[in-house]
Every structure is written in C-alpha cells, then in structure tokens.
Length: 244
Image (cartoon, rainbow, N blue to C red):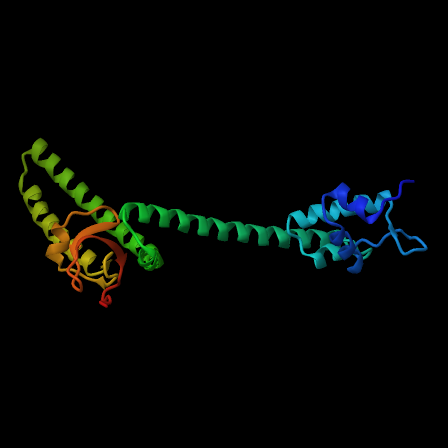
C-alpha cells in the first residue's frame, strides 16, 4: 500500500504543506502513521479524504462543517442540512456580488454620460444611486399615466373619425392637458439635481426644468448655488426635498 508524505499529499491535491498540517491540527485529516522521527505518513484513503476536503473548501464550506461531515455520527440528514446551508450562503454571496456589479456598471455609465468628472462626481452619483429605486418607481407611475392618456386620445379620435362624434375627443384633450400639467408638477416636485461643478443638490423652477434639454438621467440647468449652466444629475428628492 502506498504511503505519502505531507509534501506529496500537498502536491497531489494542489495545496500547501501548511494546509495539510493545519487539517491535522484540526483533527480533520490525521496521518495514518508517524515515523520514529515524527514524520507524517498518509495512506491512499487519506489522500482521497484530502481530495474531498479540498473539494468542499472550494465551495467555501467552513472547516467546522467539514469536520462535522467526517464524524462517524454524521447522518444523511446532517450532511444534507450542511450542504443546503452552504448553498444558501453561496446564493446570497452571488446575489450580493451581482448587486455590486450592477452598481459598478451603473457608475461607469453615469461617469461616461458626464464626460469630464472628478472624485467628487462619484459622490454625486452615489447619492443618486441611493435614491434610484424611488426615482424608477415614480417614473413607472408616470409612464402608466401616459399610457392611459394615449389610450383615451386614440379611442376618442377613432370615435370622432368613425362616428363623427367630436366632443369626446375635445373633452379628452382638455383632460389630457390638465393631466400633463399635473404630472409635470408632480414629477418636478419630487426630483432634485446635483450640480457637477459645486456638487450642490438643488431643485429648479418647474418651468426651467420643463423646458430644459435633457437625457433620461441628466438635465441642462443653472445651479442655484454657483450659477453653473450645464447638465446636472437627476435624483429622487421626495416631496419636501433638500437644498444645500
């Protein structure tokens, strides 16, 4: 029967000698023999056990859990429970990494849209991203209202063309105009803008904001603090908002 030294075990399993020795101190992988000089010797069964340990460590199973798995008293239920717990932990870690990746991609996209930026610009975008979910939710509400307005306009227009009944269309245009004004006021009372020059968070006049050139995330405004005129970062500010 083949015997392996600590160094040979480490080489065969792609780990360090210190790792094999550590498993010994934790009583997870105890050598089958010790020479008179105190040298560790491992059997082929020990080698297979080390390969299993390495596999379990590769899926980030904790040392204590691995030790539990190798106890004679470990039942199938315990093994399944430990593996399920690790599966949940890994899924959570993947989800957290995915969230961080999305934040990184959003940051790169925002910085690219700004063009010229500084370290302070990252702080501005971080502030915006904290409120991104609220801003997105509000925009969804606005799109829903817009769809309803479009449906009303189309239905009344078809009624006018096909039946010659014009007054529902005229009435709906008045309602749609009123809704458009309300939606605009609702929107601009709940968003704020971050000046890329002095990094002040401010809320412009509704008229200025409504007429300004804009992209989905930026709007060309005049900062109330430093009077810089250019594209400012849009973020959610709530009804009251805050002006620094």
